[in-house]
Image 1 (cartoon, helix red, strand yellow):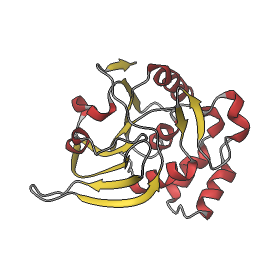
Image 2: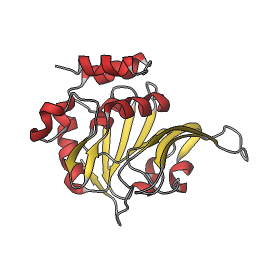
Image 3: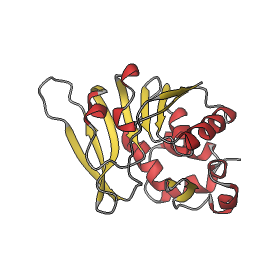
Image 4: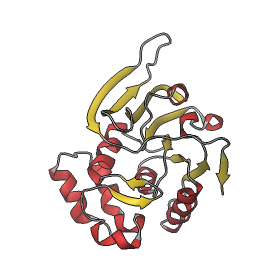
Length: 214
């Protein structure tokens, strides 16, 4: 059973993209949280998932996805797999998702969960999210579910011309802003940077060497 009521709540809060709402509706958020938190999974609030990490508030997931505007056939890079909830939403909207998680203790359960739920268009890496996934670049869109203090240059460089990046940026204990950065089609042109919302995300951390989950 999907989250019909949650999708309706998000629609009333201003999420208008029908495809995003349908992706939310098709999922059961309780699948992505610890068993002790499942009774709260239908609420529009962030929840702890262990290891100092959280599953984002559904409104923020929907808003970021709507801002990213992933299209069928596109290749999307996600930084911060976490529980895999945002990954699952993306997998319903684009061609392929490449997701990077710094914590193996989160990455492996997320991979197993997503495969069990039928998300077959997702590839997984354990490693430094700030480095992106250069071997698979360029990407049509990039989304980050943890906040670096500044926009990592590697992520911007891995966008194709015309590509979109949606990412929270700011210090762990200070003001963070959700940004949408669009890479221009022409060389030498400045990126388009839009400030979408004040947010609070866990910090984006780095790790030494990437490894791949199959």
